[in-house]
Image (cartoon, rainbow, N blue to C red; front, side, top):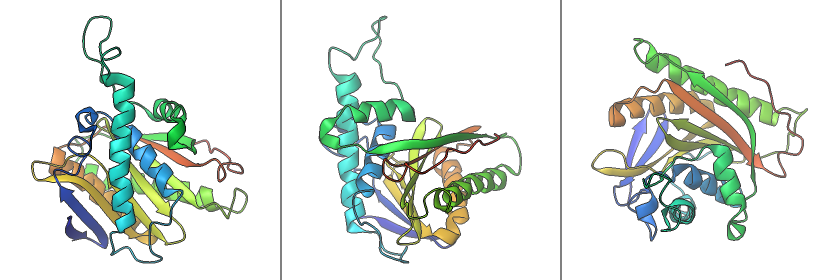
Length: 257
């Protein structure tokens, strides 16, 4: 189903264009701006399943693909309930409302969906700014994203917080597109899920690597934005999320931007 690619020890699977948030499932017509809901539903589902194999980043887990598809459809459905129904789709000027949700807004919307059993909490938020005109943009931005992700992982696992905690996710918003990094400590892997269409030929994309290589995953991500979307974002928003259980002993750090 997916086309495999390897990039500097990062394993990548490109899905057909039919498998993305704007083309897949019953509620696909609502998939234009539903990515934040989709990523959080995906993370919530992963937190309740054993998806990844220990020390094996070269296999695309079938369970992960199933969960990904379910998250797209459920996220699109929630977005449809929020904005696409006839009685809520127009603003006061008569224009169709189709906003991109931020993380707190998406969490509030999902907490109101009883059947989803949403259990994720935002641990802490930070952001990075960048100058798209700099020649060193790609190297600088990818290095800083990797630095933030590494810091989040270290703080999450430090003994003074909760060394037994296991569910850590980092939602990243750039150019109004929300994607998510999944830190799976039992399998020693970091995975990346992006539900958007990528160019004319590819749909969603999944990338997986060993935890020690997630700096390369960050570099691939920045390179992919430039190659597919011709995008060099000036702002990257990163929200770390975890389950209610794992959040109990965590302290939210104060970061300098």
